[in-house]
Length: 342
Image (cartoon, rainbow, N blue to C red; front, side, top):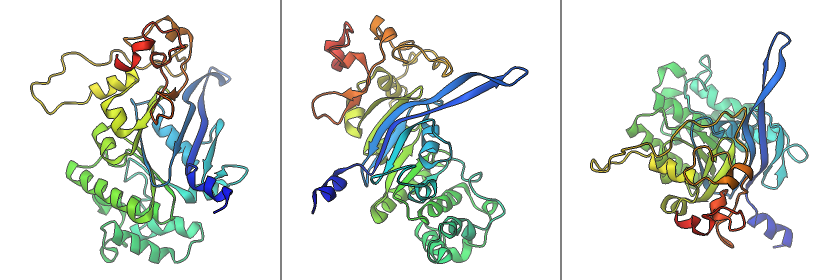
């Protein structure tokens, strides 16, 4: 194996660098731009081949916008998307990107064309991309996700249940033979029994087809079950990313701790007496200076108001990354030395 091949085999499959998306707000008689919503502001992460990266955070933190940027549904303002060594733009067209990165949306009904049969919907993308035998491919994948093509291929979306429609969406994504599948709240609208079936199906498909997942969800238990690593977003930024067991057992960022503390407990004696996090997220039109979480953080100090924290490793060679002055001895935070145990 050459040095180039070795570097390619160890490089991440997907690399996102400084991704930004600001949505302009227009107003007044002339419709001039008055402000911008900083939906995604400098997001960077990497995903290895065969890995599942879970993305969590409050509503409005930029999770879904990040997903849309990855598949080209929304055009990014700045940043780079590099897939398997090819950069979007110079090395890879948007059409090629959409073949290699597919998405399963939250609303299983709205994401299907109500005037197309299920079989045609699954085959449509493969036909557009010029892949061989799109109808045969659609029937094989429908069978693989648990839908008999003889029974379901001629039906329309309104004739299926929510769980069946989401299986159709999964089959439609796989029909493109993608390398990465983005799942944006793909199981949140399903009954718990159906949700478990779909999660197990996704796990089996990942092994069978060698897929890489980016899994977005509000349900932290689901994210823990399916993910290898978890990325935490707050107000358009990445505040923490780590292997699932590390971040679950020892969350480093105060926001991550608050997020996990908000999970309902199955123990009736373990009652939540006060909210783990007070206040609403700041306005993304005018985010706070310094650390964006300092307005709600119980550990905030003056340095948090002035200085923006940089995402860095918890230790040399550590897979645990956090953007918090508590874990930076050089930040000047009075409790930086004890940040890991706060």
